[in-house]
Image (cartoon, rainbow, N blue to C red):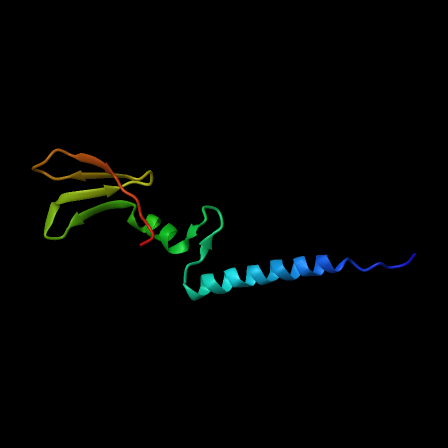
Length: 93
């Protein structure tokens, strides 16, 4: 049984895939934007979404409240006004 090496195109393709993968990793690290492989968004956007969820209030007027929900809903309320439901989106700026 004689060993037959793979064709040269195999090595060219493999080299190309490795080069592209390295370029993506270097670019991602250079810009401090780790890609979330599940949603294909930068990690800092994913983290910002997690950080904003909850109830927020103005320090100078604690009766004015913002409630950010995971589904993109924002509820504004205060003692003097009826609550208002809006939507929000964290974007890459």
